[in-house]
Length: 382
Image (cartoon, rainbow, N blue to C red; front, top):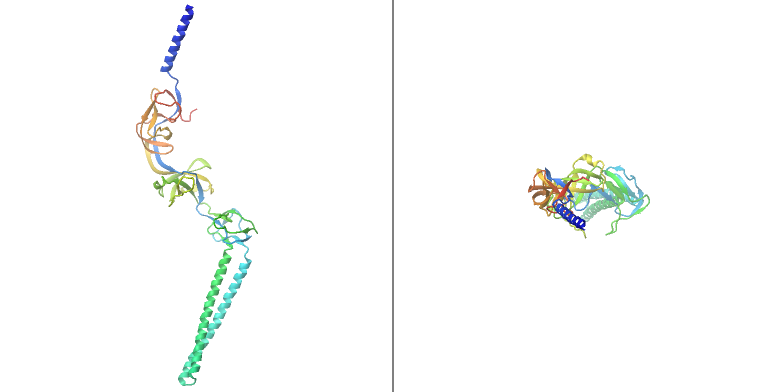
């Protein structure tokens, strides 16, 4: 019995000792940490939704009247020049009408010439009659008839000239009607798409209903990025600001760009945040060689840059002005700091930290609090 009591006492003493030791030497919690470094920090504005790579010039063309496609001279992917015929509708009736109108103009011109010649002859006859009346060779009545005939002939000449003008206007109208059956390239480009085949019938879009364009023409080698920016950030953006463009097709690569245009109105779409459209150009011509219209893009517009400043990962901030600092004993200290410029990645520190100090980059993780002992794990370590 005595030995058993001694064993129980020893076990109790060992348990109390283990408990006290655990309280004094708790297990270190592994946390991800980063260092306070010195470098460049940029204040940036990013798009709220994915932007899009667009061509500088793109025309979605359709004829302004319905008809049957009779010619598609260029297939998809063909480069064309300004003025090249891209599509022609069946228009033999309009061509015949144009030919008839052209002949009508010629006939009107000849009729005008004949009528005006007669007017000139009547005018000369009136002059002769006036001289004869002065010599008494003809009566006043004969002179009046001659003058009246000259005036009538002059009026007929003017009427013939007016009819010629009308015929010429009808010719222009016939030409315009014929031109409506022909689509020409408004600028040099590439035929990106054709929605139609020979002998198919195409019609213009009815009011309020958008139909596919027959020809989609894109200017090659010139691209821009259009991105929606939140209305709150829009006043900060001005043309000429530098930016970094990222494309899903080239992950991990940044394309330098410049803001070229800021929208003049706020886009208000149902169930979406109000935004302003911003356009950016690529700075490096070599970056344009492999681009395609329609790529999704994100932009970071640089508003301000500060070089050689203390900085920390933005993810390390707690409640905007606090961080957890790992002290020399491996314990966490919650410290208030002052911050300056910042973005999604880095934030400038103006007071409260020194270069080289370690801070927790996951301050919101479960169990992370002031006073605990931690085992520092650099970001990226397993």
